Image (cartoon, rainbow, N blue to C red; front, top):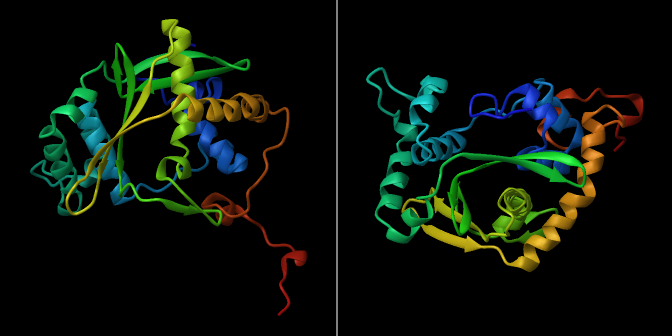
Amino acid sequence: MKLTAENYFSPEAEQFYMGSTQFKRFMQCEACAMAYIRGEYEQPKSVALLVGSYVDAHFSNELDLFKAQTPEIFTRAGDLKSEYKKANEIIERIERDELFMQMLTGKTQEIMTGEINGVPFKIKVDSLLPYMTVDLKIMRDCSDVWKDGELLPFWKAWEYDIQAAIYREIRAQNDGEIKPFRLAVATKETETDLQIFEFSDETLEEAYKVVYNLAPRFQAIKNGEIEAVRCGVCNYCRMTKTLKVEDIKYI
């Protein structure tokens, strides 16, 4: 299947290809991931998510498309509504930093495809530099995150190492050479903080093992060969669960 900017997120592309976001959804809840693919579920768009998406669209030269797709965040005059104006503050802060801006000077939204353990993968790169791959992240902050009873670095908690491993491998298949991967992070704090993180080979090799081992199972679920497992705790599982007698809790 030939991918373009127009069909990259289409149901057909999501069914044919595995992407980093889809892969991470499968890791979190297989049933929820399948509901996304079938168009049966979509996470509500929060103010925080839309602020980040606006900044992404600005630096990827897709702002006109973003405005057309999200008219609800703009006033009749075409300005951002008050709760979304933090996006412009973040953009202005980024544009004042020379090194951060250098990270964003590569080809934007570059699409590549490849295979990992026999599974077709797709990536869409925020900034494709000749010597490096850069992904722009707009985060609440860069603090550690509690997840499953463990305090983790934010990039581990949000599985950005998984994304980085996928991107590095698929780009290497296209370029014939392994390139470093960096996160360019801007925060939504009162005063926006800027950070740049480069993943070590060791970190990405460990993450790639996870992708390589799990990709065939997730593809088999997509193909209907095995049944997706419900995590039982995510929003989708709570929304779609049906109580049974054995679920009654006696206190």
